[in-house]
Length: 118
Image 1 (cartoon, rainbow, N blue to C red):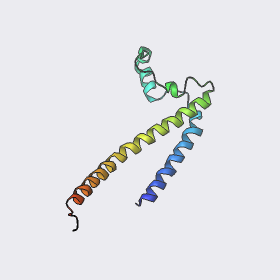
Image 2 (image 1 turned 120 degrees about the horizontal axis):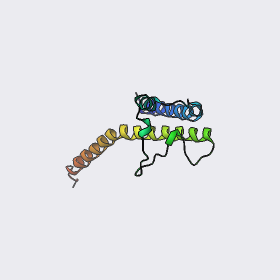
Image 3 (image 1 turned 120 degrees about the vertical axis):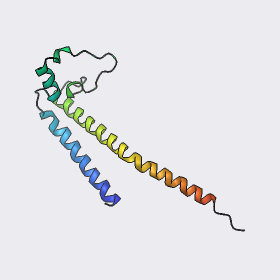
Image 4 (image 1 turned 180 degrees about the vertical axis):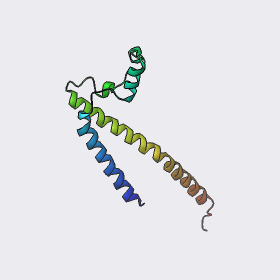
């Protein structure tokens, strides 16, 4: 696949993901998610403690400082989508970056072996 078409495809998926996360996340179920459901079923949900070292910015899939629950959930979904896409692009881009650096080093080495004209 060509670079231009890859970038276009990534841009389309990113845009769709942003739209879906922003507009559909406020309508997510208020029922417990899978992990929370298992904790309730197995009887250890009430043993959770507040972590004093790290406090999640997305507690209950929302921002605590935004009063409107729908907007808070939409922004949390949008932020999470941006973080995941950014992390994925960074991880996928690192091998390419290494190859580019290796190619640059080889180019520099090959130019050093060229003798100047007299």
